[in-house]
Length: 360
Image (cartoon, rainbow, N blue to C red; front, side, top):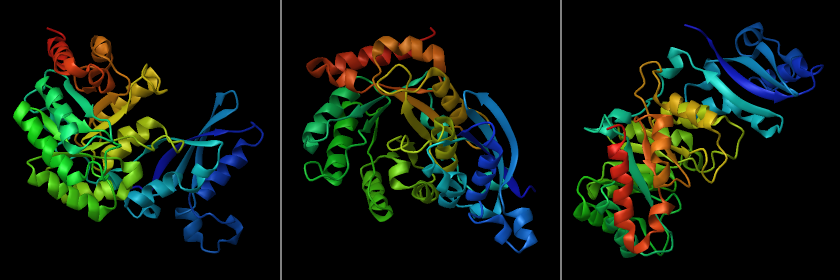
């Protein structure tokens, strides 16, 4: 069993200084102290980060691979992300690009529960459809009315907007009860996904409320709630589908395919929501393709995680998106359906039927 794992960084530097800069990052991400002050040879041999490779990517950007100690992660989600990018995330010239995890590390984390296959159910031959319930500010019955219109459009999933929490105008318990009932009555095949927020104890209580209302999926924003809490909720709820929202994921320079595709999946996400290219966020087609691949590809026996491209999508782009991602995906259209107002159900039907007809 290897006692190290490889982490790849992108560092901006002059060519004359990159070796020293790479070595400083290796130290920063391991022992964080002067090497010559370390007296124990075992620490020098096994704990101090080692620069394994430096590649010039051009225009002052270098790809640096550093081998870090596996033991330093404690095989725990928070400490793993700390070792990957803790102090170095503060440097504005360093980005975390990727990481290769050995089997011993992979085995320490739960991965998805139901996973992509569980979410697809009997719909393995077509893409899934989803929408977002908003805006915040509406009372529970107002949100329930919108949820019913969307469900009548034969969506597979309706998730809360990530801005819905436990606000006074729409308390979590009342919102979930009203929306779950509205969705169930409008279309029993549609699954409603409430957003759980707050500290770990609060999220646990909200999951109980969701279960008590017959729901089998919730959404969490791992970068806000905490990666260790995502892992904890997965371990406590192996049968519950966990959708991961990307809020705050852009606050650190971590490559989206690694963070949203690999790490969220490793810590327990069954589906990962991310900004599609050509929408209102700046992800490129290359980034989106890599992210979807990271979520779905074979990875040490971990169940695949369902990619959910979203953000400014329209029905007109359905064929384009499915040509790009294939059918092992969920397309999520929010604002474009909500904007239809009185014809929301008809617009939603047009979306779902276009997805169902793809490739026939």
